[in-house]
Image (cartoon, rainbow, N blue to C red; front, side):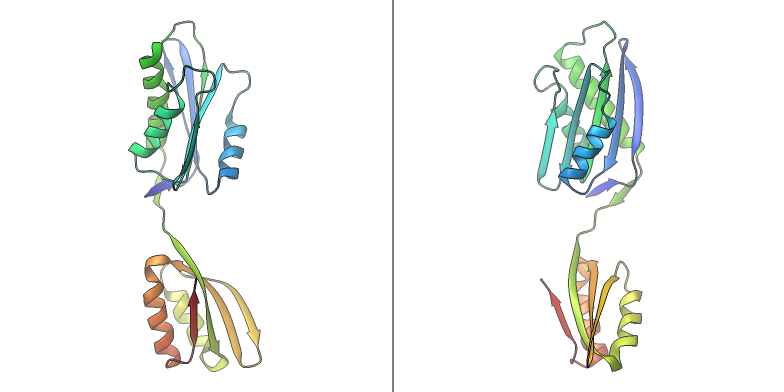
Length: 194
């Protein structure tokens, strides 16, 4: 799955109605709601939106006929294989009715165009765990862990005989990290991932 690297916007006019789409990466429902609130224009006729974060998703037609705005926008997110994304499309009515099919194409198309404009980055599942080692292995352990792609040492706690490192790694590399830690410490260090 992919998400957007940064927020992006697209504007288009369809039969005299102006459509302005905003999309951004979001990590939680609270972030999605804050993004939608920050990019909705209360002076506009409609602020329709959709977001997806893993299996959770929501959408709103904001007064447009049911199923003509939010759902096509969610389909645009899903159709482009995106996750952790929120989209809001604001419409200023131009005097010409678009009909249900026209609204679906306009909202879904604006959302899709907006999402296509954004740079994509891969969503990588992360795992957080601890490595407990003796002081004699600590310097080498930290150096080798820091050299693993995508690995971050997020905390260090010291006690009388050694240290506990809290690490965040791509989930698919947990096995390699465990093997590395075992090799460096000759089986003495402890690795714990929930």
